[in-house]
Length: 183
Image 1: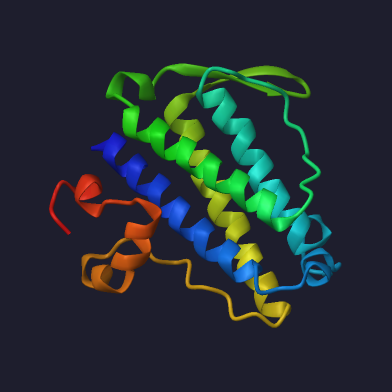
Image 2: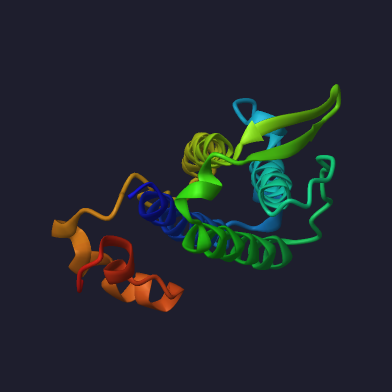
């Protein structure tokens, strides 16, 4: 059950990032990069870059390829968006392949103070919370930029399936796989 829930969270993450980044494409580059006093990291652009860079840091560790955290100078939204799509798919593939025994194994997180060993399940849960936290901030920054932010607080309620069917199909997300039933 835990592995299935992690897969559902990874798919929900993919869907939410898709919605967020599509909304960001409606902003001119200057607005994405504009300083916003309430913005973590100073701007919506810096926040989006941080979100992806942290995803990449944890995904490398979760794939037993730990590397120190690094900020990436993403050149433009199209490049960042393509990298986020690839990162989201990598997370989905990881969660899809997890077996219960792997959830308690320890992975290495390279920290400035030295390597830390952490349980795979706890690291995944931390990653999902980090994503939610910063997407919520990005949601508010979009609104402050004059863009109607997308709804991001959905988690695959059965009653809403018809409203998302086309969008999820385009993203390759099969709710039947997630819940063990036909959508």
